[in-house]
Each structure stands twice: as C-alpha cells, then as structure tokens.
Length: 369
Image 1 (tube, helix red, strand yellow):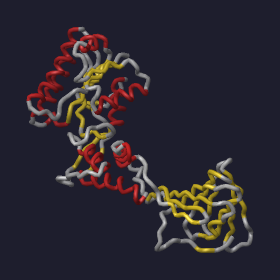
Image 2 (cartoon, one colour):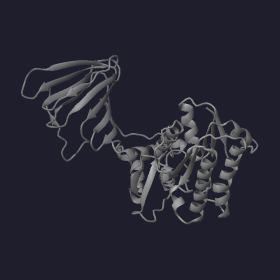
Image 3 (tube, rainbow, N blue to C red):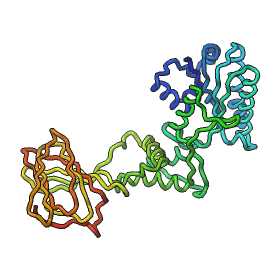
C-alpha cells in the first residue's frame, strides 16, 4: 500500500511514520512544507490512503489559518480528483472546530471540504476532532502545555500555570497512532460522522504540573511514578523524552564501608524498594529478622551463602547462591538471616524489600543466625 502523509515532519506525522515502518509499511510518500510541490501531483496519483495531518495552529497572521487548514486541503483534494483517486482520507481536525474563532473556523472548513469530497467522489472520509495530544517529539513553548512543562522542568526552566483548576482532555500519541492505523485498516472508532481516539485522559493543569515536578524529584528521592496509572505512565515516558542529552544519567548515594556498599536504587509507595548490595570477600551481612517486612535476594555476581533460622528454632537453612545461576531466595518474616560472600571477589546482590525503609519503625531486630 502506498500511503501519503502530509505534515510528515510534524509531531503526529513523525510518530505515525515511525510506527508505520515498525509495522512494515514501507511505501510511505512523505509531504511537508519544504517538500518540492511538484511531488504532490505524483503522490496524489499513486497513493492508496491519505493521512492529511498538515495544518497551521500558531500563524503570525490570522489569514494563514485559512490558507494552511482549508486552502491546502482543497489543493490536496483537487489533485486527488484530477487523478480520479478515491483513496480513503484521514484528516486531523480539532475540538476547536466547534468554536467560532479563526482557528476553529478554518478547521471546520477543512472538515466540510473532506465531507463534500466524500459525497462527490465516494472517497471514505475519516475526520478526527482531536483534543490536546501529548507525547514525544511535540514542540515545547508552542501550543502544548504538556510539552512545555516537560521541557522546561527537565531543563531547569520556569513554567507558568495560569489556572491550575483548568480541566484538560488529553490523548497520548501512541493511542492516536494506534487508532489511525486501525482506521487505515478499516477498524476506525466512529460515531455518526466523526471519528475519535477511544482513550482520553481528563486531568487538571495543576495536576499535570505537579506530576512532572515529581518526576524530576524522583531522581533525588528515588520514588518512581505510579505505573499502574495509565496517564502517569504515559506522562512520565513523555517527560523522559525531554531530558537534555547530557542529563540522561544521575548518581546514587553509595553507603560504603570496609565491608562493601549498599545503594538504594528504586522506591515505590506500594511495591517496596530495590537496592544493590556489594559484599567484599569473607564479609557477613545481615544477622537480623523482621516482624512484617519481607525481602527477596538475588546474587548476580560472585558466590555466597544465605543462611536463615526461625527465631524460635535451632535449625539453620543454607542456600548456596551464585551469579552463574540466577535464583531468588525469599526471606520470610520471623527468620533471622544473613548473607556471606564465600568467593574471592566482590559479590553483588539485588535486594527487594516490600516497603520503603522507615527510620521511625525500621522493623529490623539484631539476632545472629
């Protein structure tokens, strides 16, 4: 299938083309503002589906709204008609098409042109009135609050929240692209004459700013976002895409002494925390037990011995562990336990505990195995 994409270098266009290629759609005709205009004639003759994503939303002169959102649409449709090409057309409109402002009027005019073309030529029209779209590669400090907040907070720049109580309806770029490709393949989400992206997130502007600030702080407190919340997960992925190139990495606090080191890696409010323990040869760590706190140990380098004993019993349970054969040892409550490096090099253990450490109530009691 030959697929024409107008606005190919825009936010949605770039994401769409990347995913089309992921799905082995290789014959993509890319058209953007800097493309040789003569190619439009060939593209409209050969294409079998059209993603019409080109448009204007922040012009210097209001008349550019009509030229970019309606004018180019009519040029595209005239070219298709000239070649007798009734390929299906998907167009990105806006929820503002319902509003009486220059941008909304230009979008509505583009919609009407597509629907008229559908009646005249019999071409299938797929019109999407999109709310705010967020995700990677969206231009910051332009017309997206999410992109601006992500970019500015990630790069230590100020943000301005005019009204934190403003309700935002947002769709995530991957959900948009999934829906667009579904539509191309004949499975559009359509009610009456308009199509829509089925997954919409409703959240206040203030909450968005609060979450993005928490993402930045997570490098200090190590608390990762709630990945069980779809919006937070998508927003966090978006935030990471705006990190400065020199700022992808960040240091962790290594609590080191003659025995080795212990470094907290990830913390979650509801899934505990993960730490990295390094033990020098011959070192014994632990010799304590917990009432409710439970752990999982996995040695990933070196070899050692994990010992456990129920606090009211004399039997010692031994688990010989090695980075050559990864396995997890559960540490049940009521069992005192230790871990011994029996190798001749550093032993590295990944340790998970079911709760973030609370210095007020550590739930850790010294007792030798």
